[in-house]
Length: 119
Image (cartoon, rainbow, N blue to C red; front, side):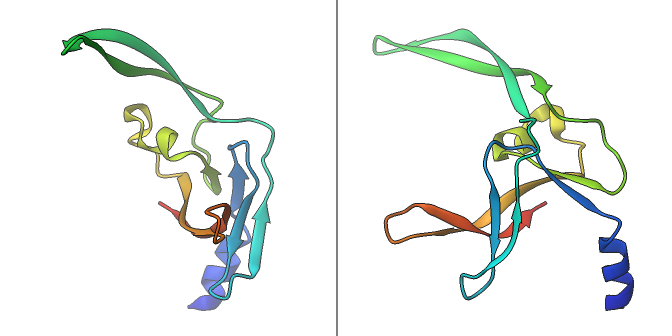
């Protein structure tokens, strides 16, 4: 069973569409894999509209109108994107988007990496 999985993994490409290096860390905090940004960043284009006010404070609604920098689906390719992009209503049907999860932080709160990529 593992052999088939490993063979399949050889045909899969991880593409980092964030502006940050993604460091995958193991259970002991060791670096397992580093995925450099590819140079293109997937971002959301939004529109902000007025939504009234509460106690003199303006309210607004932000609507996602377009995803920029995200290639079309291609079998064997998985794209690492921000949680905002992945959760966008425009990306709801995409099964090829991954996000860093299980963040590992230093004692000062700085991100050192993540333990997994969320589907």
